[in-house]
Image (tube, rainbow, N blue to C red; front, side, top):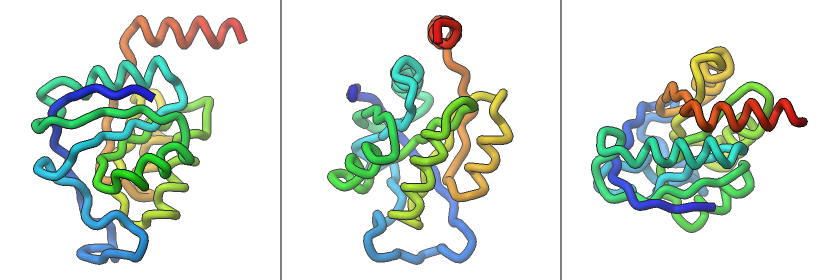
Length: 159
């Protein structure tokens, strides 16, 4: 895991049938800029997760001091949320892995009113749209920088 201090704002939307509803065992309300102290990024690709963390450190992305922590899977995501239920959650969904979709499913099963932001490449728009429809506060189209993309491509060629 890694952590970095940044600034932050998080926007959410109500899901059909959940407006104003708080379920037992669920995080209270989705985080607002005033209360968010932690942003969790769930991505099974360490280099891409670090690159995304650097991206969200930009002042245009968030507006109040916020720590960013990367986790690799749904189990680590749920564990991190137990200690900081008000954390904003970004879940990376991409072709070639089911880790993001599994983390998303685990999150919504444990916390039905959770409002994650689904993150991914335009190349995976169908996967991103399906995850968004299942339940998300937002969708962030994001392309890893060329260095990270080259590292991923090189690693897959070696496999």
